[in-house]
Image (cartoon, rainbow, N blue to C red; front, side):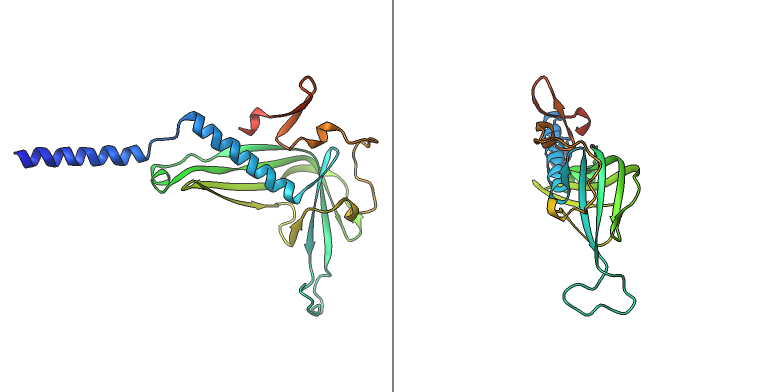
Length: 209
């Protein structure tokens, strides 16, 4: 009888311990992880996109063999393709975690999509026409065992090596943007931020969370 009671007590304690590991994070902690995910993805975006007024520009080196090897006969010539995105915004999406995810140490998983209202592509020495935009950059994150893993893709140009171009590398034609003799403070805002004229600073969108 005593052994049975002790066994039941041990089993109950084990179940409580296991379930405690799977308790969701408090909303404050979850919000902090969402904010950190937004910041990490904004940094990844800015590492490969150049801000130019109302637009962002990225570049891809595609074609050719690279590495100093002889170009194979009939292979595409090596060139740099530029993508210019107009009016970029971002949206955070969080994936719901299962009990197995939580027990495996995952505390947050999701990503950030960056959208453009319009975009155009420069290839073969000329700019193409502006067209309706969409997702121009995707960032995926997992917070596991107190560490972040981050990956990103460009769905517009899926091949080649993406990089952030220098202003001097831009094609000759001026991009569609409002020119001003001095840099505007709102140009420093990140894609998930908006300029607040009253506060005279960039503030983060609620949509980012």
